Image (cartoon, rainbow, N blue to C red; front, side):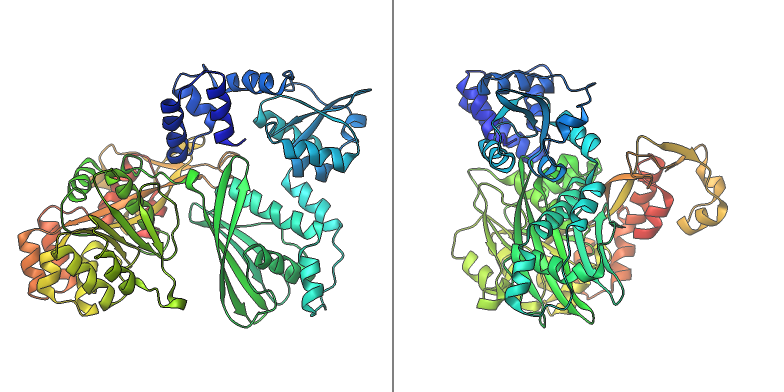
Length: 556
């Protein structure tokens, strides 16, 4: 259900005022919790299910108890499986007045009209908790796997069509549309960060990345690769006739009560186009520093640094390490009416109210240096640069820091000291880097052990030696692993958390930077001054039972 609709409903009934409504919507936006949970947290209702009597009253209908109820086959036959899944509709009764259905989104009037048209019957809405309706639809009609089989059985598309008009017609055919929608829905529901469509000589793979690991979906037949890829390109406003050059696009998808943005990239390969979708789901991102799992020292350092009037703070790490999330969390912290915040991003991943965000578009000459030069004429207090890619961008960032602005940015390096030498290698003067740089945070994301199947285990000496610790150093420390269960998909992991390494640019470090000291020397000095490395933070998380030895060894 749409969150704004629910809030307006509660407002119209005098259950909340305008100020509380804004607070609740803000909390939903940043926490990612369901609206019913937030209403319970704010003590507007006692528990999440108390929302449904209000919805039923608004619709002038009643609540039905479907928890332990199984609809008869004759009733299920009145609504085809595809229609039930597409509209989130569960038939609960049929009489002389028409068909009575419980909907996943009962407040959407369009659903009722669509059902009335599709079934040719009068539709009456009754209310039941949305999670129960969804579960019951899956139980009665089969889950996503069965849905995909049903759709694939309807697809009889040939593989030899080259004609663009024919291809577009195939891509817009109802079964193809439903199949692609189902793939996206399933991946988003599993909290995937990326969805891969990969054509090969003898098969067509669809994989999605969850918590940094790739999982394969049941592959569709090879002859459907072109129509499926074309459908994705149509959705992202790409040119479906062009298959020789890379293309970029964007898909905005409504999934339940939330809007999900997807960045789309196509790449021509030997056997067709490979398409990757980056899922940008704000509800799955913790946009606050408190939720990042920082140590107290690093948390305090960052909160102090981002309040400074000038200087550069860099977050470094490989692609997918959560650098942008950390910067967004920092920006949210300092996003006040007293500060003017500007960001230059390629592309803008998440919209944040109160911050002016500019997407980079190199095709029209709108690159980082050009945007940054324009920034300095916009009277900013703090600037975020999506990435310091070249000497010109880094130089302008340094100049901005030296002229009274706080600059936040990212770099791709293996560790925190490596960011310093990377800036110097780009061509930035060492004394300017030393004068402007305030701190560097290196980070990695490791999978956390599933709480449902977490269990202690004894690691062998070989793996302990890889970790760099000996058995006699451990004392009574315990190690944990995930046995695998239905909750975590038998992987033993659920969710991710960060490992962090903070380089504080103190005077001794500044002297080394000015002297063009190599990364190894800077790192050695930083460790002497108290810096905890990524590996050490990994050990801390292992001992706390947050992650496994294998995960730490993989990423540090």
